[in-house]
Image (cartoon, rainbow over all chains, first blue to last red):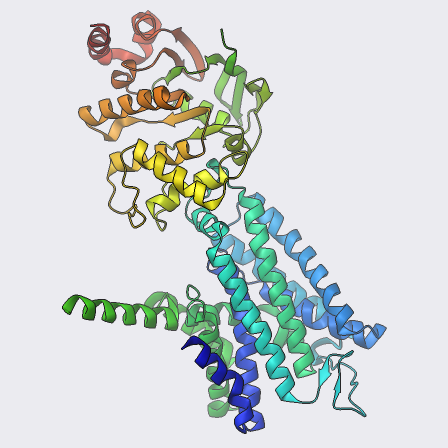
Length: 323
Length: 256
């Protein structure tokens, strides 16, 4: 059943899909991967509004390395990952060491994503500022360049991104099954008690933060290479960070496919808003996200998929009892 | 004569200008049960938290088997062989009972056991305190006495040499208090664990402790065998008050 669904998803683009639906599908899978990355730490009580920073680093470092130094994304991506790790540790260590949790952690990380956006904008001579930047094309004479990680075929991108998405789900599963996951849940409920039984709170939190940040950074790399255009607003800053939080919560961050459902939901919502209102009201999507986030947290804290699974299990349980 | 397991010297903790613990010294032999008592606000819990690594001392030393543990973080202290309970139980409510305790077994020991072994040790610890060890047992169903037992099981699963039991049996009735006291002495006998028992009601404690240290305003005002301490006029004055008669009765019961 699971594999049949996966096969269907993998085969879908081969059944003669138009360019636009295929693009939407790719975006769903890509954002599904990014939201999954966010949820790896988000569901363990560390709600980060700073993941826009990691995505921004991923996206901008590969493009800058390529445009300014001629460094292939194969080198740019590891640089971006190292940089992301450094930033994650610099932000994470003091937060975890000094027990900055909950709302305060959200605030610190919120600042991080906004600072990243501002830095990108401020370095406009290198980054193109708020107008964004396009990686120099390597596709003048060919349809693909492995060295530049550029493919003109959307199909190739679909499978590359699909592989990362599957990898993300696999990491989720590994984290979920580990003792570390239990320990982090314990930490999120009673941090002092967790420390008293020998759990190194700081180290465990840093480890999962690092996993989540590095995954998100790769999301930024993929985004930049696939879109062949990056813009500070679309890969960093409060907007994109809020979108991740909203998507993961809306889809349901406590079930493995929840963040992916959230990605489909937010994407359709954004596209829908664009169709209905055009570009008439700037920032309308953000306003709607914010409003819906509040509604979701109050009325459906487990998210769409979480609530659906619960209802399904309840029904099945009821049937089992009746039988 | 075995050496001291724990030796506390001139331990001091100041919060700004307020000195909560002032040059407290005491020793603890292997296998002993020590009662750390005193009225509310006397510095018992602060002393306890200093030993457990939840607080860092302002000055003085805490040596566990000749190794200084003062100022280490709580998780390091746990690895050195010190387990603790909390006065107000702090269970991990979203986890099952076994998971609560298995985490302690997995993370609490100097050498980390495998997952299977951690769960086996968790079941053992739960059985020792008479809590259900089946996988589906939840925290939600436990009452005050059950939560205290869970605290104890979790601390024991780290396989401590020294158990810091912040019992404060205030919420329990007479029978439950006596059961708790017997459980602690049973744990000492079965596991060979040395115990510091923090308490402000002296009654039940007097039945099982080998020695008492009495604190008042952050200072040690008396130390010795339970009946010596109970007869100490300073202790009676600052602490026992109307409880004195009950304590005498308990000691009498113990001696018969």
